[in-house]
Length: 265
Ligand code: BV8
Image 1 (cartoon, rainbow, N blue to C red):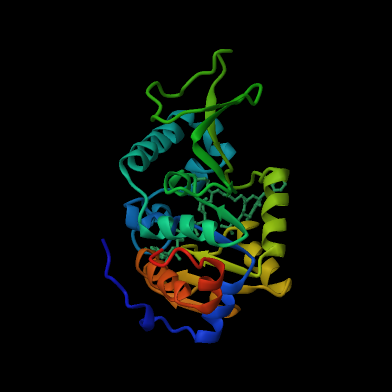
Image 2 (cartoon, rainbow, N blue to C red):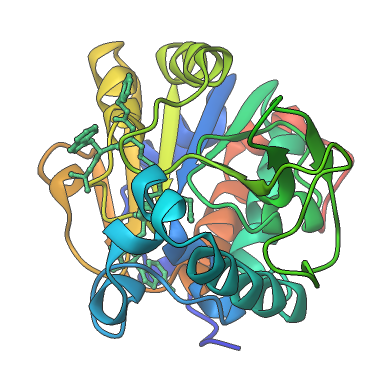
């Protein structure tokens, strides 16, 4: 696993850390970068999925209509990768944060289920889940925890099953957009972790927090559009930066006041 970053190395003022730790409500928007240190490939940047594969063939309804076999081979491969992977320290800090804040939502673009495996409960899966299959005929959704065997998998009704994910050109479900927008608007702090922030409407969520007067704290391996308006941008690996940030937060007065009896948390 990564380096043990010293909490003092983080370029954050004491005042800002106090405000972050002292907030009542917070949320985190995550993208593929939060799972990178678990060994799950990201989409963009060096070695990203979209460098090797054409998203039109693999992550659009047209692509699925044209070649469901190819799309399912890709999702089966990703299911196998995700099953082998384990949550990394970034996922565990996010699960800890949920126990600290009175209100906390995980808004994830990821479909890998890693946040739940690390112990997060209030997770909004903006782009669906690779561990759910949906009947193309009647929309019936089934949960699974193992990779599909038969390709393409079939529903009991005989129709084909598709991954219950949101492809490009498909709308996110209304209740997901409603829950995520409400969480963003009510967050005094939004952490934005491991996302290139190019995919909408997910990338609009930190802007909602900012426009509602909340703090936006970015943790990413490289600058993004969020960097232009974040209250702080911590460049580096989430699996190193989040544990160091959490250490800084736990030393603040507001944290101790909130959790007087958990000294070594
Ligand atoms: C919608 C599927 C409207 C699940 C994904 C034409 C028609 C319709 C819409 C559009 C259109 N043209 C554009 C759009 C909008 C489109 C969009 O935003 N396109 C972009 C590319 C311009 N959006 C949509 O289509 C959305 N739907 O708008 O519908 C509509 C309304 C009504 C009726 C009809 C339509 C749907 C978007 C969802 C698409 N599905 N995936 C799956 O298979 O995974 S998107 C895909 O990108 C994943 O979900 C992924 O999560 C997401 C975003 O990427 P990131 O998570 O940010 O990952 P990325 O690799 O890009 O970045 C990783 C970052 O981490 C990097 O910055 C890297 O530096 C950093 N990093 C790496 N390692 C680490 C790290 N950081 C920290 N630590 C590390 N260790």
